[in-house]
Image (cartoon, rainbow, N blue to C red):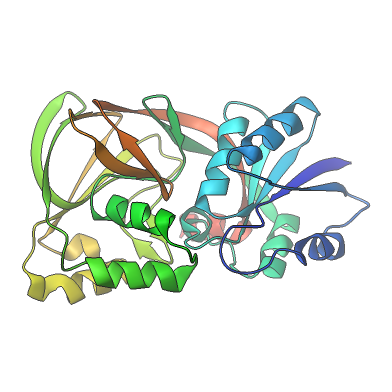
Length: 299
């Protein structure tokens, strides 16, 4: 019999998680899966719980939360045989949406009964772990404002984006991408393992979390009149067709930095005060993915 630990972050997103344990009992076959449930109590607690699951012989850790909680669980499972599953319950749910995991909790639980195992990559950013996206531009600015907001959820995020979009000024970044230096003026600069921020806003159209390659997406300086079309392209996954979009692919990236630089890792705000070294950690996480994703990749 398989042992699954469901780690639930009660503070992620805006919807109550009190009903989740009952859904788990209803959807998971007790003849096949021995389910255990734990609720997080503070930041970093999901990592502690996931590490204990590894030590206690669990087959899988199922994260019920947003991208930040997924990050906490995944870093504890990196380079282990314990698999990661996701029941999306956050504000953005970028990695879950990349893999086509339903946002409805009941439907997401059903995919665990019909899924396959996929080895995916992660990123090491100095001494920090990233599984989805690492941002240094406008997205990082929004992440810091979102972290300071009293309210969470999609509508708070959209309100911040719309309120700040026309105020934010592009910045200059000096990067070394696989040994080659690039000076970039960017509104958005995203280092990506997954394809999107969340809410189907695709910033790295060609990113594949299992290809062993880091994607770097740059939204260059653009006239304000082009803003609506760029937002539309991001939501429709056609940003790569814009002349204001540029992308690179690499194994290793160095961001030269000597200021207090606001960033985000998987949607969680952070600050770097020195150079930022990004390394690929290929096939470091084994993930439970819906069968539909496997079919989609084949086609």
